[in-house]
Image 1 (cartoon, rainbow over the protein chains, first blue to last red):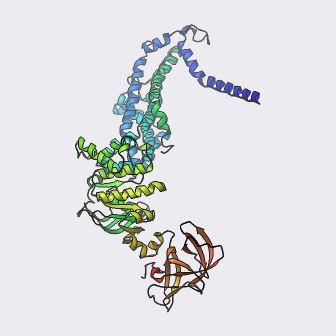
Image 2 (image 1 turned 60 degrees about the horizontal axis):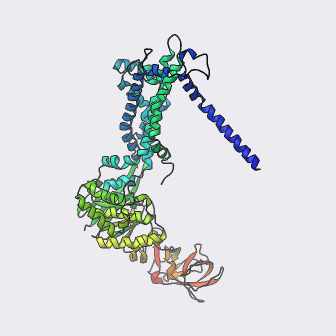
Amino acid sequence: MTMRKRLLGWLADAALILYFVFALFPIAWMVILSLKPTNELFSTYFSFSPTLDGYRTVLGDSEGIPFVRFFVNSLVVSVGAVVLSLLVGLPAAYASARWRFKGSENLMFTLLSFRFAPELTVIIPLFVLYQKLGLFDTYVGMIWVLQLVTLPLIVWIMRSYFADLTPELEQAALLDGYTRKQAFLKVALPLVKPGVAAVSLLAFIFAWNNFVFPLILTSNEAQTVTVGALSFLGGDRPKYNLTAAAALVSVVPPLLLALTIQRYLVRGLSFGAVKS
Amino acid sequence: MTELELRDLRKTYAARGRPAVDAVRGIDLALRSGELLGLLGPSGCGKSTTLRMIAGLESVTGGDILVGGSSVIARPAQQRNIGVAFENYALYPPLTVAENLAFGLKARKRAARGDVDRKVREIADRVDLTPLLDARPTGLSSGQKQRVSLARALIREPDVLLLDEPLSHLDAAQRDTTRRELKRIQRDLGHTTILVTHDQEEALSLADRIAVMKDGVIQQLGTPYEIYDSPANVFVADFVGEPAINLLPGTATDDGHARLSDSARLALPVPVAVGRKVVVGIRPEDLTLTGEDDGIAARVVAHEPLLESGIATLALDGVERPLVVLTDPEVRLAHDDRVHVTADPDLTHVFDAETGDSLR
C-alpha cells in the first residue's frame, strides 16, 4: 500500500517535471540561441562556445539596427498609453459604476467592442488617416492608437472594482463635507489601488506586446521592440542569435514590473472575488 | 437644537422604458427639537429613500425639507450639516478609529488641529471608544463599528441625526447594550433624530414617536403606545406586535357583536352598522383562556411553552384562520383539548373589511 502510494508520488513528480521541461523549453532554446556565435548557429545544438556577442551587437546598435532606440520607444509608448488610459479611464470607470446616464451602457459596450474587432480590420483606414494627419511614426500617434488596447481593459476592469465598493463610503465623505471630486480622489480611488496596480500591469503588457499597430503605423522614429526585433531576420541571412537576444532583452521590462508590483497583483486579482 | 419638518415630500424614480415608481408619496412630518422619531416599515416602503432625501444623497421630486425652519433641498449634502450613521457603518478601512472620527472635521476645515484632537477624545469618551482609538475598523466587532459610525456622525455636531437600521447587524446581546447606549447618548446630546428601521422592537424601545410607513405613505404617526393600543388600520395592527395580532373577518350583528362563523361571535367595542363586513383584531395577549361555558369554544391545534409564557394556536369552529393566544406559564395544553376563550371588548379592534381603516 505505502509502496504503491510512493510510486504514484514519484510518477506525479515525473509528470510535473516533464511538463515543466516542455513548458520552459522554448525559453531555454531562446537563451541557447542568443548565446551562440554566428558561425555555430546552424551547426550545433547544445555544445558550442557560448558568447555574449549577440547581446553586445544588439545593444551596441551595430548591424544598422537601432535596437536601443526601439527599446526606449516601446517604453515611452507603452507607459504613455497606460498613463493616458488611467487618466481618462479611471474617472470613466467610476462614473459608469456609480451612475446610469443616458446611453451609458451603449458607451460601455462600444468601448468593449474595440476589443473584439481584430486590429487588422481597421489598420488600413488608420494608416491612411495617420499619413494625412501627420501622426504616422510618432509617439503621439502610437499612444493614441494603443488606447484601443489599453482603455477598454482599464475601464471595464476598474468599473467592477468601483462597483464592489459600497457607495456609502463616499456618501459618508460627502456628508463630512467632501465634494464629489474629493470623494472620488480621496476616498474611492485609494481603496482600489491594488486594482489599479493589477490593471496597469496588464495594460502595459498588452501595449508592450502589440505588434500590428507599430508594424503598420511606424517606420523608424517610433518603432517598438516587437517590430524592431524582427529586423534582425532580414538581410542576406537571418540572424537568429541576434533576434533571440533582442527578444530576451525585451522581456525584461514587463518581467521587472510584474515582480515589483506582485504584492499588489495577488491582492488586486483576488479583489472582488472575496467580499469582506 | 433644531426642529425638522418634512412637507409633502415626494420621490418618483423615473427610468426610460419602465413605469415610474413612486417611492415616497407625500410625507408630512414635524419633529420637535431633540425628538427621536422612528420611521418603521417593511423593506421597500420608502423609509430609506426618505432618510436619503433628508441627508441630501437623493434628489427630491416634490415637497420641502426644513431644518430649523429653513429649506435645505437646494443645498448639496456637504452643506446640510446632517449626520448619518449608515446601516453597514461605512467606516474608512485604511484609517484608524481616531482618524475616521477626525475625517469630517478635517474635511470641513472647521476646527484647529488641537481642537480636532480634543473633540475626538470627547466623543470617544462619550461612546466608550477611547481604548480603540488606534485600532482599524476591520478588527472591530459590529457593535464597536456601530459606535464609531455613530460617533463620526455626532462629532460634527449635526443639526439632525439620521440612523439607518443601527442595530440590524448586531447579535442579540450587542443589540440590547447598543440600544441602551444609543438611547442614553441621544438623550444626553439632545439631537433631533430620525431612526429608520424595519424592526418594531427597535422603534418601540428607542423612539419618542413612531411613524409607520407602507408604500411611500405614512399609515400612522403616534407614540409607541398609541400605535400599539389604537392602530389606525389593519396594516399597522398587523405590523406592530409580536406575536402578530389575530385578524378575523366577520359581519356586524344587531346586538353589537361580530359574527365570525355560525358558532363564533365576538363583542365589538363600538357600534357598527348591521351587516357591515369587518375585520376584528385581537392581540394574543388580550385573549384569556377561561372555564366552561364562558366565551367562545375552541380546539387546541398547538401549544408552544416558552417558559415565561406560552403561545397557543386555537381553531374556532367554522373559522378558517387560527386564533393565537398568549397563555400563562403554568397552563398546560395538549393537541385537541377543548378550551374556551374570552376577549375584552375594550381591547378589541375593529376595521372596515374593505378599506382596512379602524372603525373605533
